[in-house]
Length: 164
Ligand SMILES: Nc1nc2[nH]cnc2c(=O)[nH]1
Image 1 (cartoon, rainbow, N blue to C red):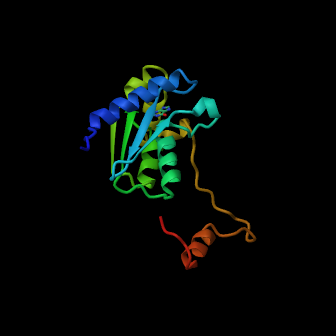
Image 2 (cartoon, rainbow, N blue to C red):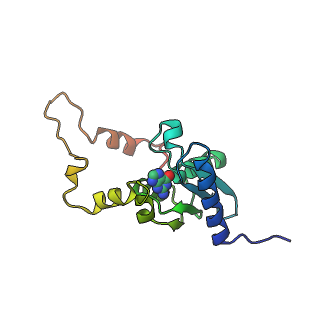
Image 3 (cartoon, protein in one colour):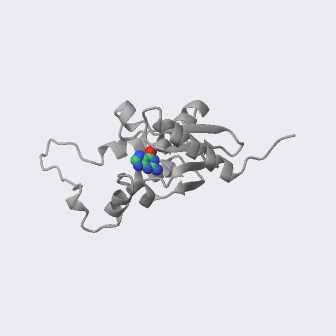
């Protein structure tokens, strides 16, 4: 007889992963990818442990799922996470074509222990974002310089390209 694992149980496991990770030199975040056919892949935050600012729990879970499944496309999968995904993790889930995201604590809970998740959300909502990190489009005046469209044109004419 097969037993159905509920969303709440996946979320509870993500929280347990997060707590255990703190006791294993990681940040207080845990996540799981659950595929449409019920395969599960855990992820925990390893930012300081691995000197990798992108090693958030959600990204780690997405990377593990993609690597083990041999795909860059997680269509139909659900991302469960102990805390609301930051903008980077949300974008990673979008790129992975995750179907749905379910979280427990939120960005304000993360802020209460010093994490910048809420600040980075504001960055994308704020018209005056330059004070935190300026982002600029720069034209290349040198006539010898390659045109910025060159890579796209090359990509567009490549018959063997894999769209994603
Ligand atoms: N959701 C989430 N927020 C974070 N803020 C800093 N690290 C993390 C993480 O791994 N996950």
